Length: 138
Image (cartoon, rainbow, N blue to C red):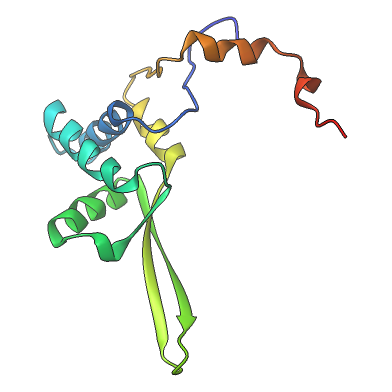
């Protein structure tokens, strides 16, 4: 990469990136939220995810779930469920919350804001490597 213009880093979803996405998403719905409130929600929600892309719904308290529903309305989170049959024949359902990183990034750069995650200079060395550099040797 020679130019950093219009570049959105494809790295992890940071608190700052999530906060900007929340703020922009709320303004699209004609709702106001301070930067600090968006940051606090982003920090709180991302703590559930850690390094994972999903969270099991059972671990959420009702007030946490409300924040997750709000982010689902913004398109930042989605839900899935898994069903399995127990030994006694009963059905067991597990509900998950999934983070949608592509939507977080899209919302973060909307409203004319060109969000560029800070890319460590050490990581840029990989952009300069030839295409076949990482071939697996047998």
